[in-house]
Length: 220
Image (cartoon, helix red, strand yellow):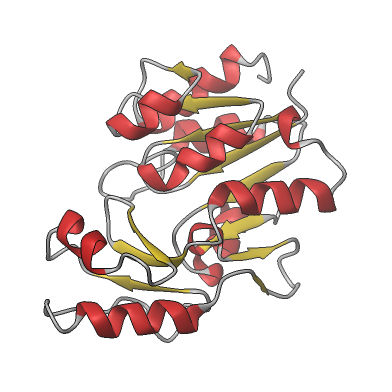
């Protein structure tokens, strides 16, 4: 039995152009179990999305580096941004970096996808960080945080076993989240790393896939 759902935002309940899927919103609003929105985006974006979609106000932000439980609550920072800034300085010796949302990010550094990710990962070895590709940007993240660890943290706080969660996503930054959940679901447009880790791959993309996943779980 699924007692809660964690779902990615960009590329999962939105289309590729980041417009919201009304099918996904309609399906999520029908749920009678807690919903945690999970994203690589910043806290103010995530909490606003949660309010507009009409699900619970619990969100995982910055790839697990920040979580919050209430719309008017406080950000709980789980990641060390100082490590990420040092890593960005190192990358800047090799690449021209374009920073994104720098003034709002509390646990990570986000940059434009304008250089080879594999080469950057080689440069960053041993610096205590990891480079994630959300499909929209590169995220330099504290190696000790992830969407999966954040989900475990939140599940404990709301007294639901993480194995009673279903998790739905589309990109590599969702892999650890779907691995720790009781059932992990990839939408059809998911990247290959996520599909390889998923328990189920639905045939629908984006919001259609979310709707299919919730029907498969018998939640709607």
